[in-house]
Image (cartoon, rainbow, N blue to C red; front, side, top):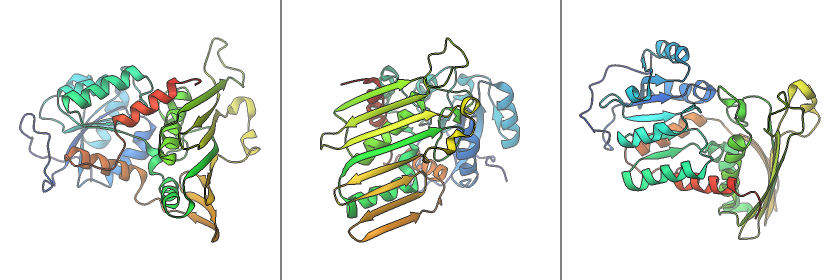
Length: 348
């Protein structure tokens, strides 16, 4: 059974849903990267009672055509045709494309809610979206997926009940290939992006979320360790940062890209990626997305947490509430602004 099916079109400008309105939300998908294939498409297939994909767009036309055939929906060859009145109720921007955040502006003009998976790393872009949210009433949901990992959710519970306030975070992320939960990384879309865009942008948000406040200072350092395929390339494969928070907490996080062509299977040598959290009354160690080991006065505990519902279902459920006009507990444009500001501060 496909996601889509024939439903009556709404009246012009009718993008609001009451709490008693159970009809499917008609989605326009922009960007058909690996996050679409492995996170959002499977989730939407399990949420057919709430969502219906009616049109797709990708900068690679053949990919859009193939996906449209599989989904039994239509594809568009331009963003303008995707945002035609009366055809969709919301937009999902799921992969970086050559036009950047331009679809957000189109959606605001058409009064369509936006789900955004791409990192908004430039402050000027974040400010433009903030203006659309503030002055045009745009409903905008950024995807800050690490907040919703089972291990992160359990850690927040333990901080509030058993472990107490965070004093220090130490950890590393290793990017080698796509991992729909633990390490989305630069390989998660159709073309590589810098470590700053993904995953560092999201790691900064994660640390801010775990500690519960904005850092007062950030020191960052980066380097190109492995030989670059292109000698003119300025992209770095190592990045580390130290964040200091008002309550005295410190976070030191390192991210590096494992160059398989240079180092082979050397990724087996260092400890696996993970994050150590030291709190006032205990400590925890997280292996994303679902394993947490923690210790307090009661002793040692290890929990492998269920991945049900899936991360995609959790994220899409929040978007469903937002489109309905509810107030889900989810990231906002203010969180995007905070992450962009943190990324812009190289030393303070």
